[in-house]
Image 1: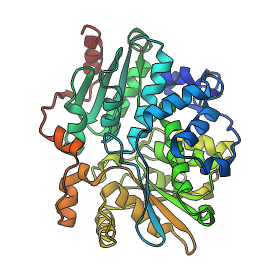
Image 2: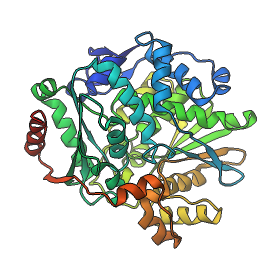
Image 3: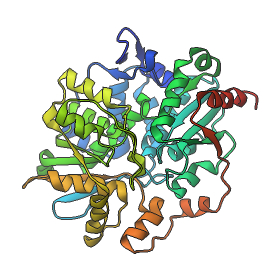
Length: 427
């Protein structure tokens, strides 16, 4: 399958080319212009790895054999995504059972497999920004991988300490930079890197944000896993609420719907950074200054993946009525966590935003699914303060919590980042 640059439609690349490049000309996102036909009922009867292999093979096309894709999926998806009942009408799709306890493990680990195929042994440098969980997933997926340097930018003081420790304590081929700014500034720095063609070509630079098509494709698979775990008679009534920051996760769900998965409606749940809910009401795209919230991984005012949502709408494979956009404020985030706790379900701020948005959206007869994107222990201090309940740290977090951080502080300045990238080539 060929992928088209949404900004420069004359630039068309294969899947592996898109994985190698990350971004296209003029910072354009790569995206398919057509979608394969799938036998949904047959797919839903398969286990996760086998089903995901068939979905990804259909999306990638004949550039990779199904056997090659099967090997990649088997290496990446080594953990479950259980659909856990919360109330009679609602479920949580738990996406935090991977090595870094967040949904980004699906995309990060599959991208590592795809990039290994795409690079063919050539050294590459991955530059990515994180608002919380991407950093850990990418760092662990590529840690000690030969021929790969990873540079992760994150907003200093604006992610939880345990989120930070998961990726700043690795060292070796993982360089972590605490930027004096917010996530949108980190993301802007990454985009600036891709505007410097000499730099990109010299150091073979790539990105592991959800702008990379391999990460996005991988995320489609767990929506199929969610629906597969529902009784057949409930599947057509499924409404899925997604905690939304950079909007890659919502985009993946909409692609799943475009492929034929019977999702009745997607709910884009944002925190106070509500560019999309405001746009959905007014038709005006007006990002505000980013606001720090309890759900910090969603503190994004200019979501990178929105052009892909617009592309799906333009293609006619999803419609406006398939998407509801809901803002959840800080008080309602805390209330959501408390309501979940009353149901006997321990959660964290991001899932609580999705849960509250889902409760507002859900109609009689519908079945609600909200995404649990991170383990509550990654937000131990917040959860304990709000719920008054102590949380034990899983082994992965307990281990890194006591380790030394190798991060360095930098200003939100491109010249400093460029210097770091050029120095990496010397080690």
